[in-house]
Picture 1 (cartoon, rainbow, N blue to C red):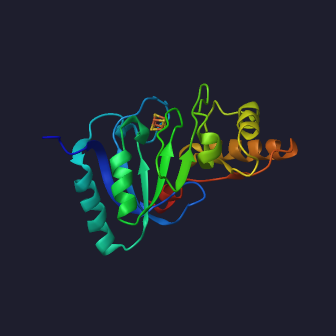
Picture 2: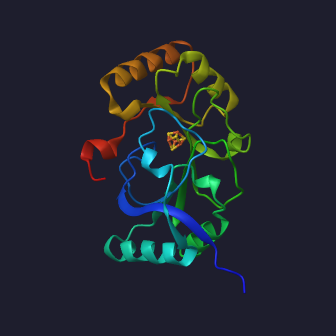
Length: 209
Ligand code: SF4
């Protein structure tokens, strides 16, 4: 008898989306365990390992329980790197239940899924991304780490449609990174790059999660 599909999950919770263009919107989060990268400044290192095995139906049940208290319809699949696991069945059941889905990925992997809002965040040192995201990405988040510079931003700007927003997100809201983000935005604007903006990690300011 075939086993039901299972996934390794780190946590499921309700909060606000603290990053990107959906910033401030109440959202349910499903944080999948595991990541294929090891960014030294990662703020979710706890998601690299471990995780609890859930069936897809158990995950849906948890989201439905949260929904009883907070009747919102956005679910964000995040990690770690959510595309490390086969999440096709999870996406299907969440869509069937009527949820809008956001997925946050480092863009090194791709699955053809019915995601409403792809958020990609290419990472150093090479800022690699799968070509499928050239047309799928709703937004590109670039963490303003010590590695980020104007040529990298320029390359990404030129690769994607000019209307796809690029968000310069200070590393953990640190002051040095906010200053660098401001400087990079000024330099990029002077260089004629468009659809760039500054971001923040709003959830860390409100400290809801
Ligand atoms: S890709 Fe994201 S989750 Fe993975 S190590 Fe880098 S910052 Fe952390």
